[in-house]
Length: 287
Image (cartoon, rainbow, N blue to C red):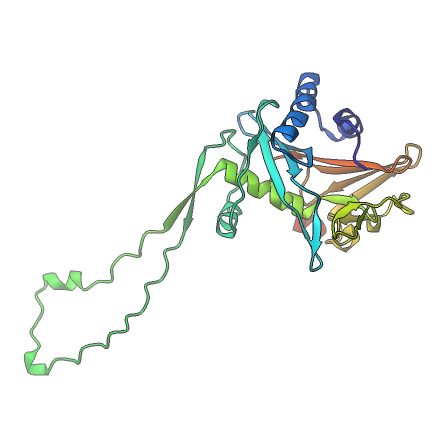
């Protein structure tokens, strides 16, 4: 089960660079339960922090309105995502469609620290559609007249059309980042969840721990995902402290994501602290 308090999570992750001031921890500990009640959520937890260029970083929280359910073998989750720059006020990150997600994927560099900041994404203008009208027949030779010299320039091909420009707000970019990172990480101990008679995903009351907490195959993506051992080889590191019974997993694809599991209590949690961008050197590291 997740740790009972954020203090426990931060205590175990402090060695990984996840630091908040005591004031920030106290504020978040107080504000998240209030937001959960206000938004009528079943669950709400701190997901992590996205670093901004000017220091106005974004704290991110995720929540659900009802237990996840399984439909036709796929996990269905009504998920809400919120951000806060002061740890007190939590604002919605609205969902984005596939087109906006594709455009957001082309953006690079640090976040600006302004949710309303506008990024401009350019795309090539679409090719003009061919005309369905038949071409006029050529004129007879005797009807052709010599074109004036000035018309030669007019006969040149027109310049290419201007590229299309689309606006993307920083809040939309943040939503994209959180969704991509969550899809690639979201680590859960294998067997922790089970499907109930109502097709809901719930903690497995028979879960007694992991037989091999020091191996990647003991951890999966989300409630029904594949084991981490099936990911691209080398995209995860795992360290196991036998004395403390503590497994620590780090993503090399998204540096800043760390998951911890205590084998003596079967408690676990994860946080992401970073720029929100994937590791561009990943392919070179794995070569």
